[in-house]
Image 1 (cartoon, rainbow, N blue to C red):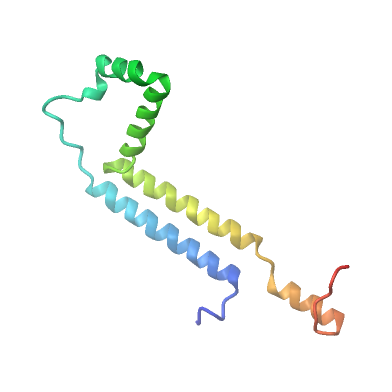
Image 2 (spheres, rainbow, N blue to C red):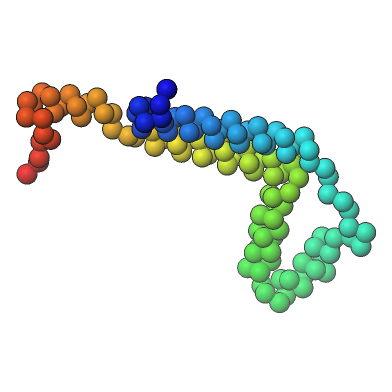
Length: 126
């Protein structure tokens, strides 16, 4: 079966399936291979009340919230959370491809409308 012989909708559906399969398989492999992070021998300074107070004192509440957001986003790219992130991104990407595939106009409807017109050309709206 040739790729060009397929309709754009069918191609997008196959791309969505490929994204989903590759993403979920890689997420499972990452999840099984992930190890817990090594503990810091000096402790985690971000967990102390003094650190949080200094962050808030120097930059305000916005700095504290920005620091927490940055640390949360950085944690998504390590260990088992990386597997969850990849699985979520692959599901969202595949759903986006399926959504776009569902919105594409069907080629058969366009050809049927032209054949019914008899001229073989598209109708133009004024």
